[in-house]
Amino acid sequence: MFTDNRITHTGKVLAVALFVLFVPLFLIAVNARWVINAPALYSYGYDKYEREIRYYIDIERDEYISGGRQIRDYFNNGEEFLSMNVEIRGIRYPNIYNQTEVIHMFDVKQLVRGVYRVSEFAGAYLLGFVLVGFFNWRREFLRPLGRFAVMGGAVTLGLVLLVGIGSLAGGFDRLFLLFHEISFTNDFWQLNPSRDALIAMFPQRFFFDATILIVGAIIIQAGLLVAVPIALNRLRRPKQLTRAERRAAQASLKT
Image (cartoon, rainbow, N blue to C red; front, side, top):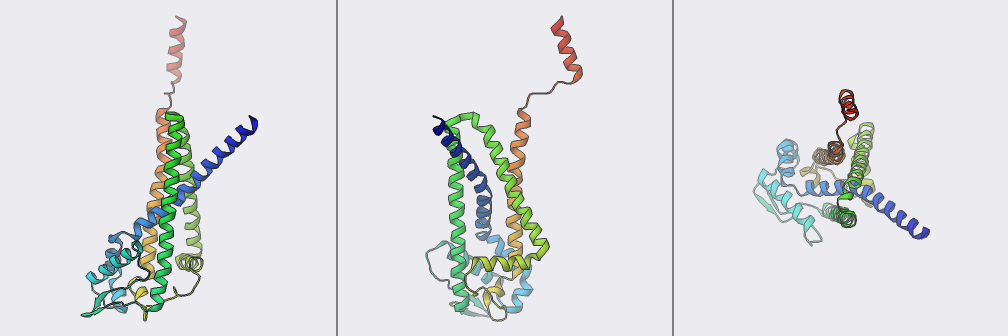
C-alpha cells in the first residue's frame, strides 16, 4: 500500500509539473501559430516598411499581400517547395525566389509545422489534465487548478522576462541571429536583400514586429492566468470581521 501511494503521489507530481511546463509551451506555440497565419501582419508589414521593401523589390501592395497569402498557404499545405508567383513591374513571375530561398523556406516550413505540433500536443495535454481532474474531483478540483494555472502563468512570465533581459543585453539582432543558428543546420538563411527577394520582402524589422506581437499576446494571457485565479480566490474567502463587528458579535453571544 505504501508503494502504491508513493507511486500515485509521484504520478500526480509529475502530471502537475508537466501541466506547468506545457502552459508556456502552449502559449508560445499557439501565439506564434496565430501571428504566422494572421493576414493583418503582412498588410501591416507592407504599409510600415513600404519604402524599404520597394527600394529592393518594386512590388505593389496587392501583390505583396498575395505573396503573404501564398506563404501562409505553403505552411499549411502538403507542397514540398514554395513557388512565389507574383507580378513585379507588370511582369508575372512564376517564382521570384531563387534556389537558396526555396530551400530555406522548406526549412522554415519544417520549423513552423513543428510549432504546430507543439501547440497541438501541449493543448491536448492541458485539456486532458483539466478533464481528468474534474472527472475525479469535480468542483474540488477548481482550487488546485487555479494554483496550477498561476504557477504556469508565472513560469511563462519569468521566461518572457529572461528573454526580454537577454534582448536588452544583446539586442534583437543578436537574438535573431542566435535563433537562426539554433534552428537551422545550414547557412541558407544568410540572405542579402539586394539579390534575394525573400529578405527584401520581409526585412528583419518585420520579424521584430511579429515577435513583439507574439510576446505581447503571451504576456496578456499569462498575466490573466496569474491574476484571475488569485482574484477569484479572494472573492471566495469569507469576509473578515472588523474589530468592532467582532466585539458586537461577542457581546450578543454573552447576552
